Image (cartoon, rainbow, N blue to C red):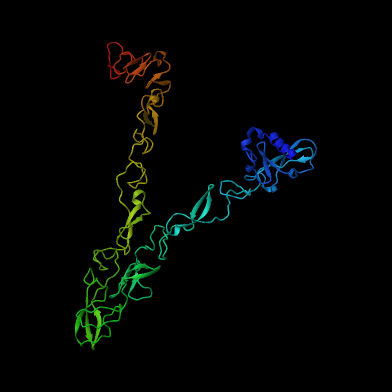
Length: 476
């Protein structure tokens, strides 16, 4: 027992663990801190039984590396080798090693298989969301267990389930409908429902997880009422077919949808009794699809002229550039609407091509302090725009390419002195002024007004001879 303790403590000492005992994996304060079969001795967990120490090592005291987990897992993930010591002919246990354990969600590879947090499928959990999103599964994300919805939010359908997870069930959008395989109403080429006679479309309703077409009027048996105005109850386009009548009698008739007679282009016709049966309804005008080749008419008899499907909606004018590509569907002489390009507008400096010339910045001076190189670049108060680049104004005092102002370049043999070009070959013109000259020029050691100075007229050192005076930089 004492030998095992001595061996264990020796290993810890030789491996440097005395320097940071609290961080060692076998550090302890009491036996309760140690695994089964170990006890706390001198601040470390050591084996209770001397039998746990392997016999058979070479004589002498020596330390060697050890690892008792699967060889392929060593130094993978959290797994690491340890050390053991041979004292006499007895090995200590392998101290400090970390062998594969159970994978948990902690951002580590606990089972040392090369994958981090590859935990098994977790249990069901409550996401605290509504509807179909309420049920979830615990998933490991970034070392933290999160309850991820089993079903994501999706469009609502009629199924007694809150599919979009907003707390309401089966709030399907209203849509026009008509019972399938039933005569009387059908969509046209533009997907607009057209009905005959008294038949009418309804609206989709959801009741008990089943959709129904509520409010639709389907064909009835043709009635033979003694009324002055006949209607098409069975929605077949004929009126009171098979009904008896006095030969020679006539009456107005209309086989179009309810509410369209007398509206727009729609008109009633006339029906005559022939051989005691009503004949066809002649000269009636029924609703037709609205098209672009019949302008200024209400062809579908809904009291709106030229409401051609799609007209007024946005489209892309592919042959145009800039903002003109954003077109609108309009009637342009063809039966179907066409995409009319937007009109060009005044160009604005915003990197958008308003005038549709494929140049979003034309007409703008991009060399100004307000737009230097680009529309959205403005130079600071201490800067000037030179060559479409903002530069410090102070630089213009000695920049030979921009001497005193952007684009003012000094010639060969000259240099820039406080915003003026001086001749390098004339020592008396050396730039020695101790302060900026402002509107004046630095000539020698002082600032001179080249507009009026007779000894420096127009340039440093240029003198006006005889009785001439310097006016506006010229000797006169």
